[in-house]
Image (cartoon, rainbow, N blue to C red; front, side, top):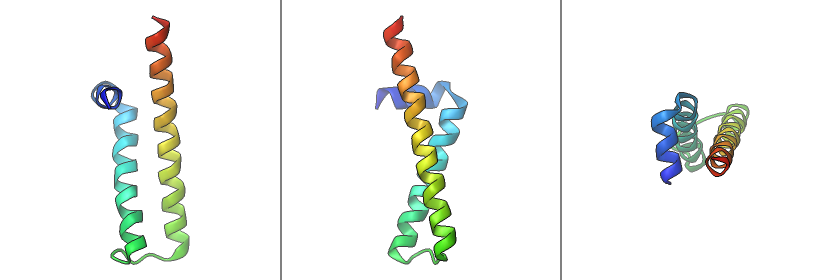
Amino acid sequence: QDIVEDLRSTNKQFERLYREHTKLKKQVHDADLGVLPLDDYTLENMKKKKLLAKDLIALIIRQYKHEQTAT
């Protein structure tokens, strides 16, 4: 969690991805509950974007950890 907070405050790309993932996670959850009516195509695209953001976030965290252990 400390790494996430550090990256959010120092890495603009990470912050953007984090916000996008959080927003998409809520929208997908709302769509699954039926609160946010979406067609299947739109929902699948949202899920793919959410997973891509999550993968990129994980990549940035791995790079950050690698840099921290290399120094």
